[in-house]
Image (cartoon, rainbow, N blue to C red; front, side, top):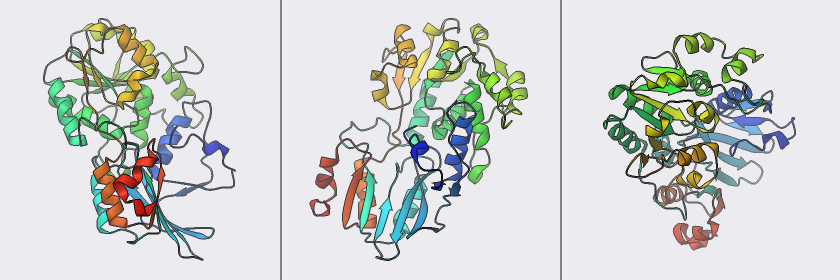
Length: 356
């Protein structure tokens, strides 16, 4: 929602310039949410392929981010020749970190006029784990302890983290359980850019059947898939039936890791001995202070005791200050415009007062 949640306010005649991966993410959500995003007027944001939009030339660039297939944009006003680079949300520590290095070594142009740059991490404590590989190894360390049931709280669209969870679950003899919505997310991006994406039906991955969706109450995710007029995910129903696990069946002593989020809390309540689970929290820590269905459930079960049954393992989806400084050095902008930050007043301190 924070990436495209206001799109419906745009006039329908305005094209939506969007990466293929992001389009597929929205397409998946359209199958589950009552409020759809119109994808009929879409222009593909192919990395380093120039678009002509009105008075502007626009060149999309791959950016590494925890939201799948993110883009930055180099924008030139043809009449004046003014040049702006919009970073979007980005980092350099995930599975696409090489794209950031490529941008620095082969930028659209050096000495841009304006850099519109995110600064989400400015003013926040540093992430405990600097890279996705470090977070993946930490996941493995927890699973190596042999807990029978592990709840991994992470975004259903954080493909890097889901991939890490699957690889470490396989390595340590765990079955990975995903809900039907996440199964659809993974299915809809398989094969894109030849990247490995775990799929329902692969060895060691099954569907946790959930009898809940937000609207209408009591409706199941499987109902949503079966009744979706697009029929996009109906082929998954067979795999869900063949490789399903019901909450009450989780008392059989097998080692399992469940991807958990707000939408499956009603199903978690039906898991026997769920209060004996070990929790890995793998999202921004600030969410733990918010009253969500998941945090209230975990707190109510006494599952957030650090050092006992809880560990925080996460790497940020956003660039740290040294990475932001590297982008500034690489593009050498005349002016920097802060965006997506709670501390814009700190920018001059880190990126040169002459640029503000």
